[in-house]
Image 1 (cartoon, helix red, strand yellow):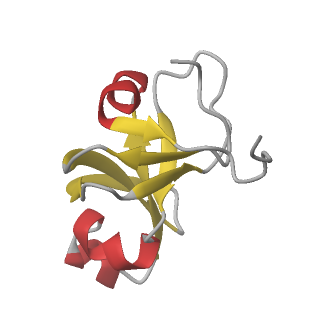
Image 2: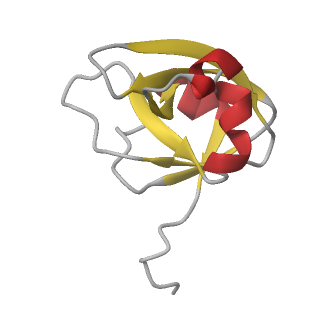
Length: 107
């Protein structure tokens, strides 16, 4: 599978356990795990760096899934900022289906 690009969308084939990176408005972050439901769409939030072995994505239902991927203690922290999902090329290829680019006209 080619390297994904910013804005590209993928749909989960089934429930899948993923790691999330929890970001704080401070010089530290943490990580957690959660289950992305089958059918949920993720959006690549930035172009991966050349040679990257992982990349970040945001679930389409970001707010509704926040409690799944961010532990309560982190959400309650005064410096909590946001979260991203951590995806690996192999996981993306096996567990997700690429969706058509909404900006590409249908033929």
